[in-house]
Image (tube, rainbow over all chains, first blue to last red; front, side):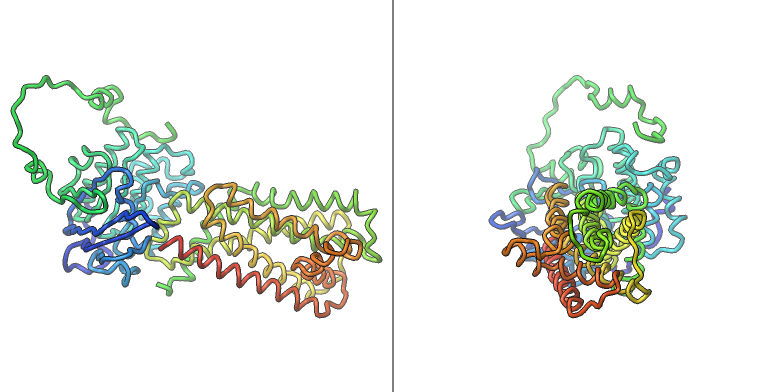
Length: 271
Length: 253
């Protein structure tokens, strides 16, 4: 599995941080969503961007992925300016949006072939087959995506994002709306990406997701990044831990996963 | 990036064409309304309409063809709207491709899908007695005008496809376009209409286009009406293309 991840990145711009943002501002009419965002993400790092609904996480990701223009400030991705070198930025990134952006009418395999052809890669069919088996979709590959479960769609969505091995991947709330098992599958994907050296910027509302996956955690609040640190660093912001004795109850998630079986076979079709 | 414009557009057109071939019902429903209108006019109302020496089905087929295109392009708006909703439009826009290829793929698919629907409608018209002695050059001119009209209406359809907030909004714009031929020379000679209606009918785009198509198919001289028809098509095309471009840039900024 990891072998596929260690391919060289698609572009060779390697100076400076993978993502470098200074003074980013964006307003929708009167509403000032971003009010001067500063953010750096080092190469190979997984950064979780936390924030409540409407905090501007998606706006920031859309600006970084060249889908939206900022009102002020600068942003560089993989060394390229998002405004002046948008095409180079797009060659360096992949975006997995909030909703699985897959073609419902095509089969899973056709979706992957489509992206591989648009990235002008050789042998799109082989790339598609490789990803289908890596994401446990080989059996479902020939079926239309409209028959896929939510978890399968999300896996396909992420698989489509990995085609061409972009050095920077944006995942905008990748596990929203997924059941616990599908969520763990997505986490596994992100971990593999990180092990392969890909820089990941992940937005999430789930704090445990950030704890599980991120090297660093940034919190976006009222249009600014108010903290950006490792989990340990963030913990030091609060008074030292008190020692208390608490009976360890299994969480509902533990019970659910024990009952339905964490290592079940990936479902071949609609659940 | 534009070096890949043709290749990327071809790949993306292949994708949208699959949407058409995998939902053939859209082609059938595109053709079914104009066919129903045609049969009703030919076998119910047509007997009461005086079209001179031209048989009624020959007289009204050009208008039916324009109605076919007007109802066909609503599916283009719908397909584009679905792409916007599903997030796949943004996926394409965030990829290193020729970005405008996404829109052109929808436009080319619209041309292909409408061509199939038009062929189906002409097929039914032949069964209903439509005959034309027009030569190859006249048929090519008819095809050219229909392509130009489809192109113009498709770029109109791109605007709601990009900007609509709901499925209904994405397709409702086509109703007035479908209705426009009824207030033209498409079904009834404009001479029988009351003053203001007649003034509108004679100066709206459909009349000049219908008259030109009819002249070509019935081997009559097209006269200056041809230039009026082409000017209307070109003007609509340019205006819609510019507005679609503005909607598109607003969508990605």
